Amino acid sequence: MKTTIHYVGKFIKAMLLFVFVFSFKLNAQDDENKGISMYQYRHVPPDQMEEFISRETKYWSKVAENALSKGNLTFWGLFQKVGGFDEPNSPNILFINTYNDIDAGESVWDPSEVWPDVSMDQMDTFSMGEVIHTLFVKPAVWVKAKNAVPENDYNFVKIIYHNASDPGNLIALEDKYWTPFIQSSMDSGKTKQKAWGNATILSPSGPEMKANTISFDIYASLKEALDPTWDQNTVFPQDGLTEIGALEMDQRISFVYRIVKVVAPTEQ
Image 1: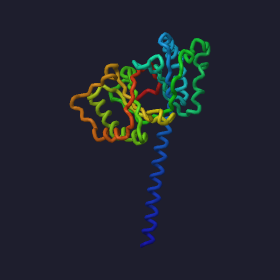
Image 2: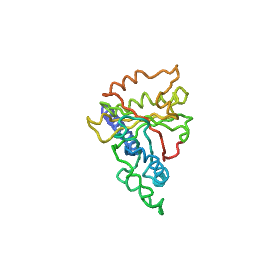
Image 3: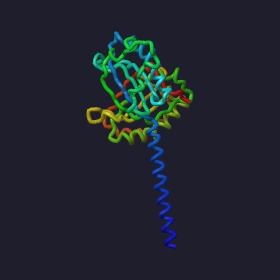
Image 4: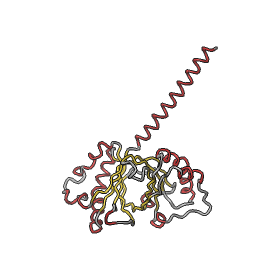
C-alpha cells in the first residue's frame, strides 16, 4: 500500500511539474509572439513638418506595408504630438515599429524594392529632424471596443507612462482589473474610448527614466482624449485601482498624439 501511495505521489508531482512547464512554455511563446517594439521620438521643426509627414505617409508607409507582408515587421505607426511644453526642445513625432526579430529590424527598411525609381533625396526624412529618445518596449495587453472601426475611430491616443516598483506585477494587475472593466465599458457605451493596451519598457531603465510601463487610451476625437466622459452610472474597480496605485512610485506622465498613419494587420 505504501508503495502504491509512493508511486501515485511521484506521478502527481510529475504531472504538476509537466503542467507548470507546459504553461510556462505557452506563456513564454505568447510573449515571444508579441515581438519587441522600438519607440523613436523625434523633433521635427514646424516649418518642415508638412513635408516630413507627406514623405512618411507617401513613401515609408509603403515600405512598411512591404515589410509587413514578409513577416518580421508587425506594426508601423506615425504619431504627431498634440500640444506639449518646451516644444522647441521636445520630441513632437513618435514612431512605433514592432518586430518579431528585433535583431533583423534594420533589414526591413531598404526602399529599393518598393521605390526602385525614386531617389533617396526625395524620400529622406531622417535629415529633417533629430532623434531625442529611443525606447525598447514589450507589448502586453490589447483590447478594443466591439464596434470599433480602426480607420474611423483610432484618431488620437493618450500615452501614459507609469513608474512602478514592480512593473511585471503592474501589467498583471491592469490585466486582471482594468482589462475586463474597460472592455465592458467600451462595449456597453459607458465610455467613448475605443481601445486600450499596455506594455513594459525593456530599455533604457533606471532611476532617471521615471517610467517602466506604458498604457494607451485610443479615442476618435481630440476632445475625448483630453477630457474623457463616462456614464454617470459607471462603477470603477476601486479595489483593483487601489492595488495598482500602490505599486506606482511617481505621478503618471501622459501625452496626447494624433494618429497620422498606421500599418498593421487587419483587426478581426
